[in-house]
Length: 195
Image (cartoon, rainbow, N blue to C red; front, side, top):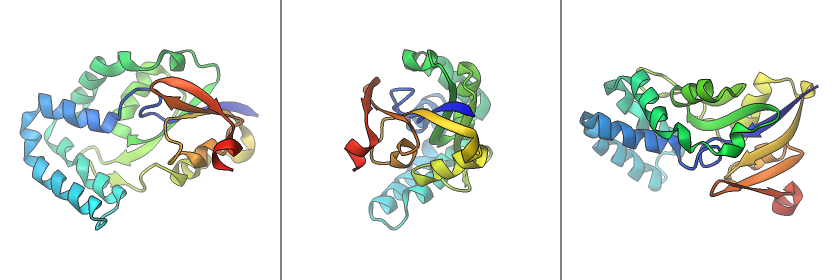
């Protein structure tokens, strides 16, 4: 049986939300994407008013990738931010499975650089930025994990995430749970938090 550890990505392995920060990086380096801001603002308002959900918001938020050289932008972004990866992640002991709601076009580059084994994240069309399938968050993370691995073939040892609210489903799988707060690993027992 293969032993694995599960990691969330944003505010867990790195101290920031990579999708939002990449948007800011792109705006700075490719200022013409400012054209998308009124559309993105409208999406945000519709989400706040609960006319659309977060997945629908995110489905169209990354439309700005249509107007940037995506591959070189992603490389430039990680050239700047790779050093912010928490050192404890670099010293991992077991097979690492990173499961994130962030876009695949953004995280595949950092997977190559850090050399972790498996990446499960939200799939996007690289040409339009639109989400393909479901946003990889909450229970979708577990579903996607067991599409990659047979339940009976893996033993999940440690689970790491900054979000107690959204990552209860993946925390429920691990022998050990770690809440990440400002880059620090805080161990807890699943039943103590969730009952």
